[in-house]
Amino acid sequence: MKLVSVIVLSYRSAGTIVETLDSIKNQTYPNIELIVTDDASPDNTVQVVQKWIAQNRQALTSIKLVTSDKNTGLPANINRGLKVAKGAYYKGIAGDDYLTKDAIESYVQFCEHNPGVFPIAKVQLFNDKNPNAVYADVQAYCDRCYEFARKDRHEQYRMLLIQNRIVAPSATFYTMDFIRKVGGYDESYRWFEDYPMNLEVLHAGYQFGLLDKQIVYYRMSDKSVTASNLRQLKKAERQLFFKKRFWYMWQNGMGWEAVKQCKSWVKLQGI
Image: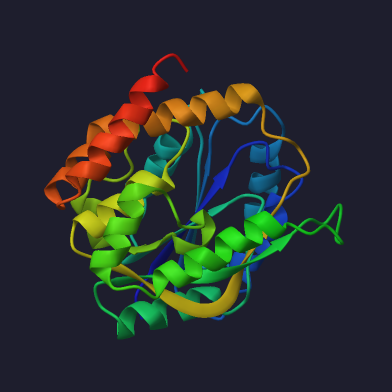
């Protein structure tokens, strides 16, 4: 039975990460390597994780904690975990989300039956502080993501080159061979990691497929995104466009779309 490396990404996760870790400990799949990688949390996240590890050391095949002296951003934090990972598969999850008991087993079964296809699973949105909250726009985005996963590879690549369409926690389950092939996550995009990686999936000849089960619980927050954060995200997306997306579009026979988006990003040069 192949080893699965589950990498938990933590930052200011002291209040939620035990739920995440417990969900991994309780998996039906028996061969899991748990790696928690913390991006210099200013709270007591590391201490909470250390206490959990001391109480659950024998619960999984192996458990590791990776820390950093400084905050480096999402891609670098994931790469630190990947450097010590030994699994045949990699599953990433944030330290405030959690998995159903059969999640890893479902992911592995999908990949074993669909070589060259990476699964996009369904997610359950939740907010434990406001359980009656409705996130219609986010749910609609998730539903469009599931429809995207039903397309063939050529159409998926065309659609993803135009804009991101994948719900991050649902799709992070890759073979480690692929991760090594592309050199891990691109650390030049400090503010996001999923879109550049998923473009590489399709560019490298793989594709996505729908794992039609709700196996990821995705925590929603009532905190609004600040203007500063939005600006940083836009800068990162602009960088991705000129570094890769423009050229990938051009190679894929989408020259007009590339020129059109180029004009739009040039106008946003001052962000």
